[in-house]
Image 1 (cartoon, rainbow, N blue to C red):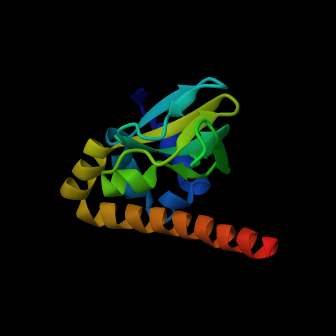
Image 2 (image 1 turned 90 degrees about the vertical axis):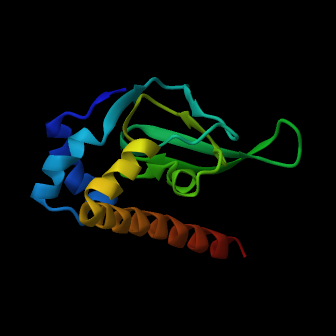
Length: 155
């Protein structure tokens, strides 16, 4: 993982809903908390049951997210996440192991926030942490709403 270049910070503000509530001054402080990872297509980013030590924001590429079923070796596709999506946010907030497996479907670029840096952000800059959490909540709420719509369409 490498440090987050400032030009990426400026770009994500308009592209990622989790950053929507941040102003330009807030964005100046973010690079010290985030990193960036380039993931080749086909790479398993994490497996269900792995420790959860970071959340990721997709700025390019797509991830396939799968969940183990009660049938050994069988998984169900939970979703395909693309640019603008968050992955791994639930376990970092709860402190539990990963609930799903994430695989890069194509070359993918992630902005990464580790648990340590998330805690540091909230401790050092509580107002910024609250704005950021509002953005995460908004993003997760939209995903949940789309899930409700898809589920309703089946029945």
